[in-house]
Image 1 (spheres, helix red, strand yellow):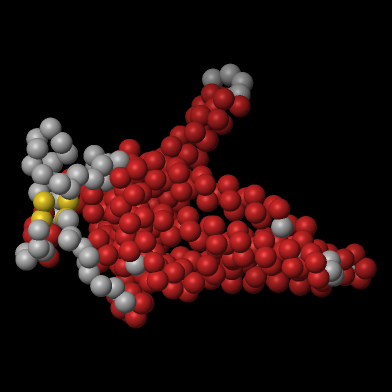
Image 2 (cartoon, helix red, strand yellow; image 1 turned 180 degrees about the horizontal axis):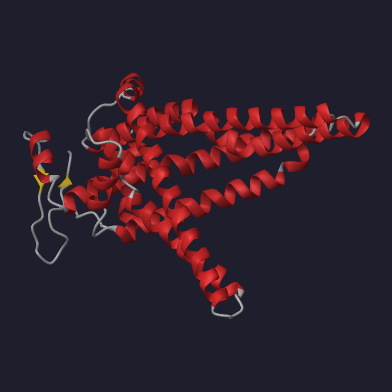
Length: 323
């Protein structure tokens, strides 16, 4: 007898892991195409940027000219812009293709690499617009909170009281909680863009609706993958910072390359399971809102479908058992 999947962090992570393992070759190919270059860029860029700036600084100290300082600034800006565009494009492509593959893998449909990449023609631009809208809202909220904190500080000073660091801490805490709240509500926005026809503000609203009742799971996924990935990037980037310079020797260069490849593989794994878990969370949220039973009934009309309607359990959760 099939057991009902657990509606929690472990259940979502376990289900996403099963889907990834069932289509391991496909997700390996997508990782090599998008996630591995993204992971390598995130880890190696700080080291390479440090090496370039260190080299230019040595030349500047010798020549002591204004034009060299100007050239350093232009080179840094251009390098940073290329880096940002690269990781932004890779992240959108990875999110679109992996979400598409996990969604179809959830239903047991065969997914090919060509079809996953082809799906970007429909989702890439919509993902860009949706992310852009989200960033505009985040920027507006940040400006509003800073303005409110400034007004509070001015008001306290006007009353003759001394402004302490507590006020700044409260403002920073409110800003952080606001960003986390938005991030949790928009956790499913990219999945909505890829799977449904919604995009932009509509995708953000749709995500906020679906995540109701599952915000605890969304927070757990956000904290787990965000903290682990962040710690990896911080520790690995710091570890290799001194090995990326010019003329360090072939041993240092070899350690730098091998270390970055190994670290990139680990970060790649975390990013892959993060996107997959978000897609599975989307399916669970649809089941919780009673939107998934009809889709699965149509998809598996000729196969065995288990629909647990125990009122004491989470309603409308659909468990599909394939022979």
